[in-house]
Image (cartoon, rainbow, N blue to C red; front, side, top):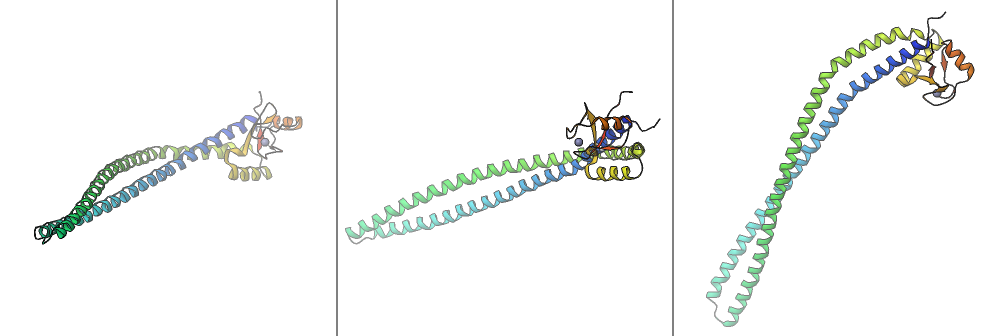
Length: 237
Ligand SMILES: [Zn+2]
């Protein structure tokens, strides 16, 4: 009676799955950290852009304010000239010039007010963005701490599972079967093996022949004709 039983195949498959889970979880942590850090730097960049935008708006306010002041000086000059006007005609012309200058000033004042409210809005947005950065930084710190805390456990799980698999895969016959097993494992991990249920490969749903079932019942090394996985079934003892 052979010691290689279908249960040993099943046990090996279970260990391969556990190892894969542990390895995936271990690799997932640093990926999550990287994604989170990317979000932080994007949010940081948005803050920098927003600050630049605010600087541009403020510069525009300053320029327009300066412009308004020099225009007001112009109106003052016109007022002086108005007082010195030597004819009604000249008086009317200067008055018309003053009216149009005042209208232009009013427009400029509106523009400055609008720019100032844009600065306020841009500052609100900057505050929102800065809050976002600090939230994202906190989240990154949390993910990093979580990753670090589960890492030692995962590493020791992987070490233990690797040892257990090295013992459990003695169920695979030496020689060509073992080479095939190693190749499939390297390529597919736990998907190298597939349980047969109700006469069908659970990975690709291809039916096993009655000959296959007999061979599996004898715990022979058998590959699925369709998907190439190592087949096994759980034999009722
Ligand atoms: Zn299959």
